[in-house]
Image (cartoon, rainbow, N blue to C red; front, side, top):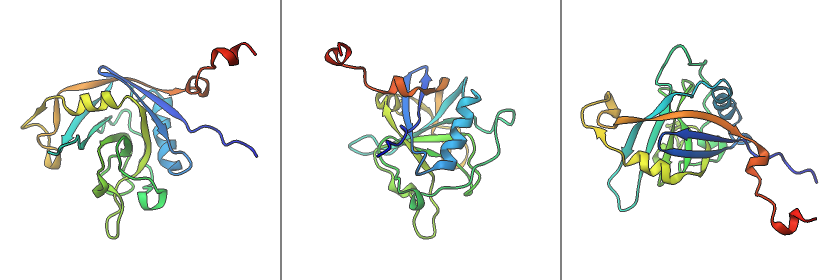
Amino acid sequence: MVASPPLPRVALVTSAGTITITLEKTKAPATVANFLKYVDLKRFDGTSFYRALSFPAPTPLGLIQGGLRGRSDKVLPPVRHEPTSASGLTHDDGAISMARAAPGTANADFFIILGKLDALDAKEGDPGYAVFGHVTEGMDVVRAIQTAPVSPTAGEGAMKGQMLLKPVTLISARRVSAAAAAPAPTAAQSRR
């Protein structure tokens, strides 16, 4: 039996800490390929997490959003929509999903979920948003960004009151090598 190659991982190094995500390339191949193009071209470098949405609840519930915010000098063509009804992925805690206007318009902005926001999943009559991976390290950083102060007046439409007063810089986004993703050998394994 041939082992399948490991799923790609990306480290988002921010001014608040590092968030590592594992990308579901077999379940959302077009969306993952799109995201990795931005990573490999270093187009996320120097951008930011600029939005934080919180719902009142006993546990953290909401999202943080980052990316290029329409910077025409860095945006690539949009990617086809891969709804959760096709991928089998859901907007659960740590899910990373594409921001978009209409389906098929997503390009360089994404959001990370805190809690479970299944209202963003596809359902009859609603294509939802495209989940393409999950945070595997750094949810403490995601929570810190989500609880940062927001401007009560900044933002337009549904995002009004959700824009961070001080956006969190996304310093770099880089693939994590398979060797770096593998657990370190134990002392007994090293002596073999």
